[in-house]
Structure formats: structure tokens, C-alpha cells
Length: 289
Ligand SMILES: Cc1cc2nc3c(=O)[nH]c(=O)nc-3n(C[C@H](O)[C@H](O)[C@H](O)COP(=O)(O)OP(=O)(O)OC[C@H]3O[C@@H](n4cnc5c(N)ncnc54)[C@H](O)[C@@H]3O)c2cc1C
Image (cartoon, rainbow, N blue to C red; front, side, top):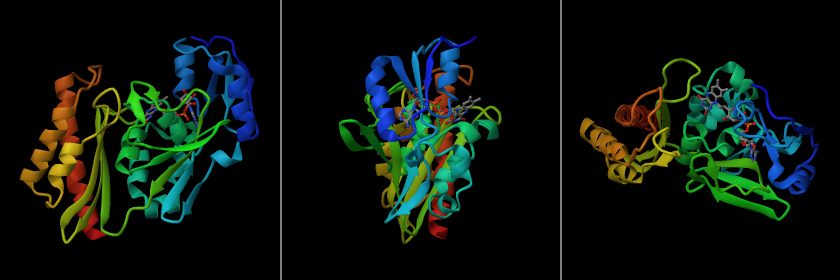
């Protein structure tokens, strides 16, 4: 299949891109790495008359440490995230998650901003963002707003992003000492989307968990935060009984869509299992950090 015809625009600044969004309104689509948008255009699920390529806007790139946060430009590629010494040191959960996204070819072009903006519950960044307590910086001609990842993903392919807004930056608090994370993803083969995935980030004090965030990939129409499972683990260590109870609570909120990767019961069970594994690894890491 080939796409419907479209005009291609290559703005060199953010104000120029925002103006193009205003000029073309509903007929425009932003283009990042193109690895989700172009397949949809080829299938004619999306037929924008104007494509606005964000690839030449310098302020949308880069990974920097700002105070106690890491700031990542929306057009930063997965390849750049994977090879960032700063992230390896300060945000290892993100690097572990990115290493499991697709394959090198996709990671060279695909961007963190595109992965988040697409709003696909099968993408890995939404759950990673929930576990890492990310905030998203959204810019429009009306100004800038900062929105928490928690609550950002509304339904299948739908987020809080307004049609005239661009996601410019992702802000992530740097985890404190005695923090540990893990992303566990079940996939049928290298390069595949998750059958089920669990992202866990925790902090321990004297061997007991005092902060924890658990988020799930492909468990429902959006990435899910497992609040009851989190609450059940506060003040606890990780042992078989606590892990099993957390997995039970996780499975109780799963409502996955059946597809070629499995039926709902299988995917739900795998969310539980990925959570068990992520909890054990994250706990070990938190106590070593
Ligand atoms: C074979 C294959 C395997 C894959 N496997 C995985 C996987 O395992 N895990 C995973 O997470 N992903 C996977 N993907 C998806 C891939 O990561 C995509 O790159 C990602 O979903 C979209 O990022 P992109 O930069 O390509 O965005 P695009 O495809 O260019 O854009 C996606 C959507 O986001 C919008 N958008 C892009 N940037 C912005 C912005 N800054 N502000 C506002 N809106 C924006 C676009 O308008 C579009 O609607 C896979 C893709 C392929 C082709």
C-alpha cells in the first residue's frame, strides 16, 4: 500500500512548526521517526494532507541533567537513549526498557516523543514513564503546560495532547540512593511488541520498600498504573508471599485485548508473571544501590 498524497513541511524552529499546526489544523500530522505514523498512513488509517517533520528543530533534541531531573528532548531517538552514559548512570530503568524496544533499525529512527504521543498501550515508553514519575512539557502557540504521565494516557491512541500542541520535552526525577528498577517484557521474538510488560521502580529504607511505582504494558487500552499492588508493598520486603499478593492485585486490574500474542487470560497471567520478576530484580538492585 502507498500513502494518500500529502504536502511535506520541514520547519527549522518550534514557533514555525506551531504556526504550521495552526495553518493546517485537522489536516496536519506531526512526523517524528515515522515508525508508527507511516505504517498507519500506508494502510490509509491516517490520511493527513500535510506532514510536519520535527526532525530539524534543535531544541527538541538532547539529554541533559537539570537540578534533580533529567530532561529529554522529544525527538531524541531510542538509539541515543540507549547510548547515553548519563542515562546509564542516573536512569538505568529507562535504558533497560529502551533496549527491549523493537530492533536497532527501528531504534535508529524512532523517538521517545513519538512513542509516547502515539498512545499505543503496546508501546513500552508509557509504562516506563508511569514508573519513573515523568512529566511531559507540551507547547502550543497559547503557551506551555507541564502534565504528569500519570493521567496523560486517556484511551487507545488518545492522550491529553491537544491538536495544536507539540510534546517538546520529557522531565524525569533522578531516583535517590537505594532506588532500583526493572522492566520485564515478554515478547514472542526479538523486535516484537510486548505480549505483557511490567515496569517497577522502588526505593527501600533498611530493606523495606518505602516508595514504589508499578506500571504495565499491553494490559489494557492504556498503560496501567497498579496502585493497589503498590500500596500493598509499602513497608514490606520482597518475599514469595508479598510478590504473589502484588501479582494477584496486578492481574485484577488487567483487561488486555486478545490478539495473535494471546487471549486475555494468558496476557493477564503474563502481566502477573512479569510483575513478579520485575519486583524481585528491582528489590535486589535497590538494596545494592
Ligand atoms: C517493526 C516495529 C516494531 C516495533 N516494536 C516496538 C516495541 O517493541 N516497543 C515500542 O515501544 N515501540 C515499538 N515500535 C514503535 C516504534 O517505537 C515507533 O517509533 C514509535 O511508536 C513512534 O515513534 P516515532 O518517532 O516513529 O513517531 P511517529 O511514527 O513519527 O509518530 C507517532 C505519532 O506521534 C505523533 N508525534 C510524534 N512526535 C510528536 C511530538 N513531539 N509531539 C506531538 N505528537 C508527536 C505523530 O503525529 C504520530 O501521531 C515498533 C515499530 C515497528 C515498525
